[in-house]
Length: 276
Image (cartoon, rainbow, N blue to C red):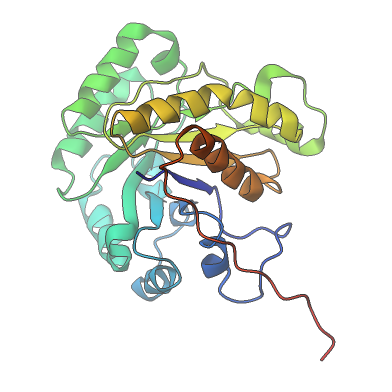
C-alpha cells in the first residue's frame, strides 16, 4: 500500500538543497513531483534521462503537457507536437505516472468536444489526467457530469486544485495576495474517477491553518487507500517554502491512520557549506 506525495517543484531557494543533483535530494524527501517545467518547453531526451537517473523507479512524475498543446492550440491539430513530446519523455519509463492536461480558465463546457476528440485520439499506454478551471465545471452539476462522462470513456482522471483553505481568510502576506490573484477560486471536489486519483492542495503561510484545512483530505486518502486506489497528493503553500516538510507531514498524518502504509525514504542530509 503506497501513497505518493510531493510538491509543485523539486528546487526552491528556501530549501537546504545541495548545489548538484537537486532532484536526487528532493526524491529522498518526497516520492512524487509536479513536472511544471514541461509546460513551457519540451525537454530534450537527455534532460529527461537525467531526471530518471536521479529518481527511483517507483517515483512519480505528473508531467504537464506543453502550453502549445493545451493553451495555444486548445487540443486541436496537435498530433505531431504530442508525439514529439511523448518521445522526449520516454526515458522516464514507469516514473511517468500521468500526462497532466491543465486547461486554461477560458476552456469552457462548449469546448468539451475538443477534449473528447483529443482523448479519443491520444496514444494508448499512457494515463491521462485533466485539470479544468472554468467555474461552470464546478458550479453546474450537469456540466460536471458531462466532463466526467468524457473522462470515463478513456479512464482519465479529473485533477482538483483545492484552494478552499487559501481563500478562507484574507491574505496576510505578499505571497498570499499573489496567490489570491492567480489561483482558481472554486468549490472543493472529492470524487475520484479512477484507481489513481490526483489532488493538488494549496494552504496558507500559516502551517496550522494549512494542516487544519487538509483534515478532510486525510480522511479521503485513507478511504481511497482502503478501496485499493493509489492516490497522489501535491502540497502547495503561497510561497512553497514549507511545502516540502508539509508533504511529509501529510504522509505521516495518513500513515498514523494506516500503519501498513509504506514509509517515505529517509531524507539525504545536506552537508553544510565549508570555506575549503
